[in-house]
Figure 1 (spheres, rainbow over the protein chains, first blue to last red):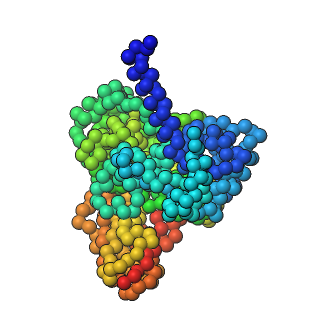
Figure 2: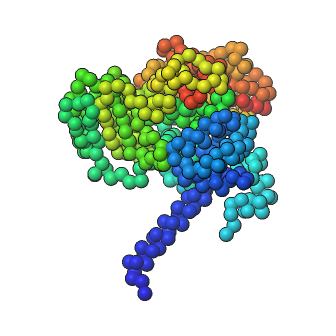
Figure 3: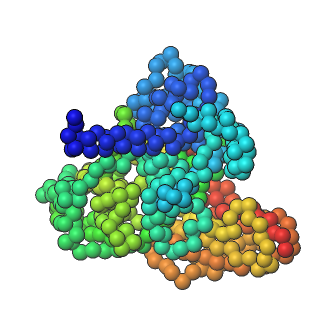
Length: 111
Length: 388
């Protein structure tokens, strides 16, 4: 049988993990497509999806961004680079309406 | 487990009833609100990195409370900072390199500035064509009272060598991947100004975590990026720091560019002081005006210089009337302004605000386009519908 301290420790770790998952789950998903998973994995390693969702850029601008992020550590297979650029410039092109961002609430029960 | 997308696909009726989501594709569906302790009613541009924008309705208070003060981070905030073990090192071109504790800073003479701090990219979302970056609209700006020792007093203790020309700041932000660290520098003249501080307090309380606890640089009148948060190292350099966030980042062209034209880094300069600018707090965009006497109010600021006047137009810029400037003022701080609009008849109107500063700078009709989306300062405007 587990000691009381160990049980408390395990419970706390589990709660922390759950909290972390809930935190990640707050960010909206990227749009569906064959590159959705790979883009999500590569980009949200460092930052959440809203940073991508709010951009409205030309293909040339997305190309610069993808290359900059690869230089800054985003793990993108060389064979996937063009597909990343296509996916981002199709879904987040300059003609798309601006994204409506959520508001913060400082009291949990108001959410 | 039901994924977010599956839930959304199986709940179209619930979605249709949510007005704010009606125009968005399913994948972009957002909760209307996100629980963030201590941050009330802010526009959540990103939670990771943590970037919050103040909505226009909060331009109604001369001092912005911390809960409404914008937050801008390029990196992850430090996961832990212990005020007891935190140290600030001062080195480089100095005679006596120093290491100071928070208590050491608190024992030094304290000075305060009320400073309108604005992110260089505030208004980036209004640039056409769009440029990459956090798509700030009007509220990556706030006005707060910052206090702490003068930077020059700290530098004097270290004894600067005559070779020192620039002061570099390095904070404790946690850098992801191979991203260059957020290190920038300011020229000696600004560093030695009596109002440039190492701030340990904001609005009379301990500097909050999102604003750089336990200490941040405070370079008043300049873009927010100059005021490094979670400060841990000050280094006196013999030349301007040339890392990513000084070059090619945070640079403006020496000559205006055509929209979409690339920046020639060799023909550009570092962004320093803020532009002249005004923002309409109320009415808000799309408001229905029902009173024949409608109050229009907001704030105006101009970096290191003073606001001279704010003018309002309700006839597409054909005529302008002076707004009343608020009584509260301080060097580097915004002025609140107020105007009573006599609404002539029902219909659609555009309300515009235009600030002029003590150097004669006037807000332009169109902001100067640049690829970083910096220092946007076009005349502010809101569209309203009068139903008298």
